[in-house]
Length: 484
Image (cartoon, rainbow, N blue to C red; front, side, top):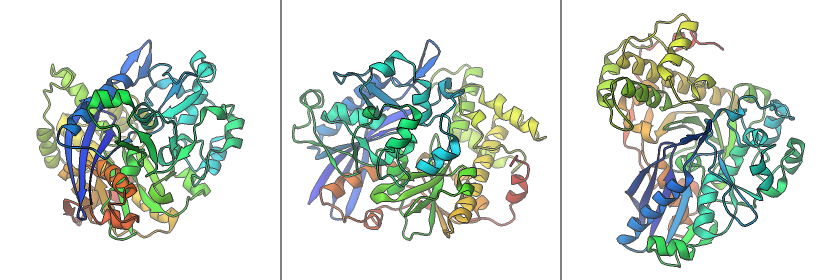
């Protein structure tokens, strides 16, 4: 049997439609469309341009259908953000971006430690629970009848059926630890209407068939399925890790870096809470025990500022990434490092100045040029990965003998090598498109084209390169320069 699947993979800076062909125990993946994901600030609030994203998806699905029938479509995206539907199932305004400042002063009626004990989700200002508390007195929330996370919203527009896919729902801070269901007692204590929350569904469940208007817009056939995949992009990426044993750590590295291990059940200890680890649900009821690290966002934002200074505009850059990485490779190692989990780096804008301020606070030199700043960022990321991998082992008792680094960061050879050095473990880099691969394989499994267990799915995936740790690093000493 063969199958052809469209993976809609939405990231913080761009969206893609990928087509995966699955046949004879092999999967072949190709990108057929890419479109920008550019947030828009309106009257002081940062929004996602969700309608532009949806149009990009429809255009991409039309391209996907030109080369043959598509059996199924699945959608994954970033977590925590949502759209609100009214009683007629119409969207009430563009979803608000998780980097918006509206949650900065929110005080929860339930203490953070109690939220963690109930849900296992780390205390982050952008969590859905805090977004809802920030919106508590708004006319928009009062008019809402259904809350749909971003991939669930797109799935609803494609299929006409509303639901909350479990891996992404687990990031909201409203699901019970372990993901069994919505924590309705907690929801009531928070003052959130439980009726907003749609029924849960699992990766691999069928949401429906394409609606007539989607068929007309894309040229796909009416019998094309819409399958609920692991709709949190990190959940899809972890499903797409080419692990051969259970003794692995993963780094899903893009705009964000998510660093952790895969577990059978959540860890809800005080030490886990204090260390900032979160327990998100993965494919087949696994737990993605991980820590959020700012990721390549730090470099992306610096490059945006450097572009502006050099006269570049929106994608027309006077700063070359290859030149920056070459300069960073030649720069002194570990001269300056910052805490890449520091929330001061969450908001957009003026990133070089904020990194400089953090360095001055710890008595470290501020890089004098973009190449040195790039080295500072990459060293800081590798150091954050080291701390997360070490802490995950300490808090769970899980042994790690290899780190799988997947996503866009797998293309950054310097970052991969620094990660191996810092973690003192081999790093298996790639695949770059782990999220789309996980998306496609869950769809293929739902149609019986691949074996039903997660290890068999992963056996179809391969890393691209291995990086071995080099001796002689000063990573432990560098960690001592940072607070905490």
